[in-house]
Image (tube, rainbow, N blue to C red; front, top):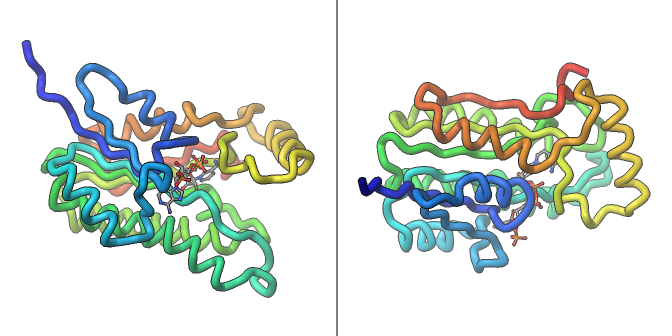
Length: 222
Ligand SMILES: NC(=O)c1ccc[n+]([C@@H]2O[C@H](COP(=O)([O-])OP(=O)(O)OC[C@H]3O[C@@H](n4cnc5c(N)ncnc54)[C@H](OP(=O)(O)O)[C@@H]3O)[C@@H](O)[C@H]2O)c1
């Protein structure tokens, strides 16, 4: 019997967590559209996001994982310009995607945004990430009310070994990974496929909306 294919849009799906989500979805019954700057879409450009989604038409599920970069450092040291650029990609980019996807999403469809454990774990020198992720968590719940019956959720990853850390000094990165392994209750680092499973649940569970799903190896409780 012919089953209608589900249409997925993964903005940020060319690497890391987004790429792992696309791997979970690539089956005979899915059409998966992947976008990022590499494919010509900058999520911080509202018009570009609008035209991209218009070119696809009806969608079952939107996932946004774009925008992993944010400057770190004390509020007295961080460049406000750089902090605003990070917000433009991750915070405003997610809003652009939700705003323009809403008219194309099927009533039983979903939006899954991405936040991060720093929204609620208080760590010095991370105020930009904390603020962006906390703002997105608040917005996720508002959108879940406004856009119902479309479901809106956010996944909040903890430390996950992706290309997001490839620009770090290798010694600092190894020491960060070692410290995480020692201190996390699960005793291991997160990998992108661990996090991707949560997106699949958010897209497929018909009773889940307005939820923030923590997949962080226990970081918030340690
Ligand atoms: N990895 C972690 O430890 C961790 C922890 C907490 C939260 N998160 C969150 O999880 C999400 C995914 O992170 P990740 O680790 O998978 O990062 P990643 O490997 O760096 O992947 C980020 C993806 O976003 C795309 N992207 C970045 N800026 C974009 C823009 N302006 N427009 C369109 N696409 C853009 C990138 O592709 P292009 O470069 O081609 O644009 C890439 O496909 C981010 O929101 C991050 O903050 C990650």
